[in-house]
Amino acid sequence: MAARTRNQFVQDAVAAYASAHSSRPDEVQLALQDATRKRTGPAAGMQIGDDQAVLMEIIARAMGARRAVEVGTFTGYSALALVRGMGPEGRLLCCDVNEKWTAIAREYWERAGVSDQIELRLGPAMDTLRALPPGEQFDLAFLDADKPGYLAYYQEIVPRLRVGGLLLADNTLQGGDVLDAGASDESTVAIRAFNDTVAADARVREVLLPIGDGVTFLQKL
Image (cartoon, rainbow, N blue to C red; front, side, top):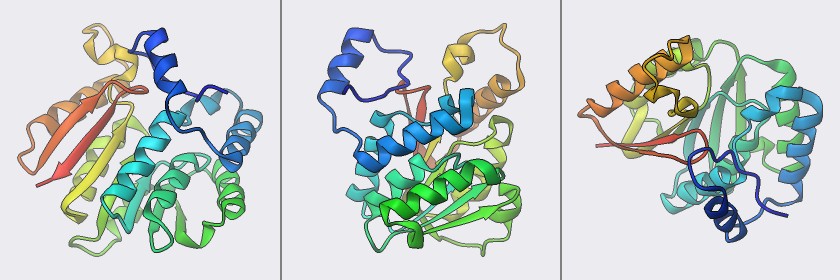
């Protein structure tokens, strides 16, 4: 079975070849994907692709991450990838507001044997982030929540990243709408502002990759 991808910006033949030469999801991940499709309907499109999940897992493992935070958990596929990359000593704080969708996440984290490594806090993510102690706490962060909130989340998370730590932000191309001057919906406007702010921020070094719906990688200097 070809890996599931949300590719929008790479030629189909190239994307298919890349998928055929990438690691596949395991049985738990496939079951989680199936449950997400059946229990969330059209919202299932928010789940990251297999290629992005493998990349996130590899990055977490390669950098030796042990502490991570995720804003926007949905049904837990990205969280599972991060925790697997961090290994048994890793700890992940997940922020979300949807009890129904995160109930699916809890179920499959348990099935994967990683539930004791993940703390899920339900409620506005800004409240959760602002309640955290100041200072460096995280090796890695993943941002995949409401787009108008990206800048605020970013400003709260960056001071809490260790030097050399990474922040990954999803959906930073908005289907290509960031290039369309006529696209003025709230999410696109917010992502443009986020992208411009990140590009001008001397605290980080960044690259925006055209995988999925665009993923920005930022490293704290």
